[in-house]
Amino acid sequence: MARGPRYKVKYRRRREGKTNYYKRYRMVLSKKLRLVARKTLRYIIAQIVKFAPQGDMVLTSAHSIELRKLYGWKASTDNTPAAYLTGLLAGLRAREKGVAEVILDIGLHRAIKGARVFAVLKGALDAGLKIPHSPEILPSEDRIRGEHIAKWAKTLREENPEFYAKHFSQYFHVLKGEKSS
Image (tube, rainbow, N blue to C red):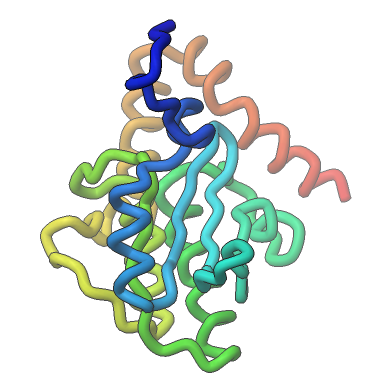
């Protein structure tokens, strides 16, 4: 590690690769609420966040696990349809709190056309929030409805039934539990 009087230690969250302070600074200067869209390996998280000097304040949030626990969602909680529904849920909750306009904060995620973070954006837009965006970046309606997953599953079932059974075992397990109850 570099030493000496001219070496400047970066902020901890920058060193850990968690925060891009240049982007954060630009968003804070806008003085608008942020729709923070984050994805993990299993879940999607959407929050409406307000900047405060002592730390960001979360006004409302939605987590994709809520789709399963509160609304009976049977599918995966980390795919594009789940991201859309999580954004829709966050947008509806924000509208209840009187939020009308926000900006999108995708953090360190890359801005790739049709990505899950933009499915969250589409859900929030459909809930009635005003968010500046480019229409080309949003996922297609087919992807939001999950038709790409159904098409791939059908192809996989015909070509490789063993891998199909292994890959979609979560869906089978959920459906089996539904039939037995």
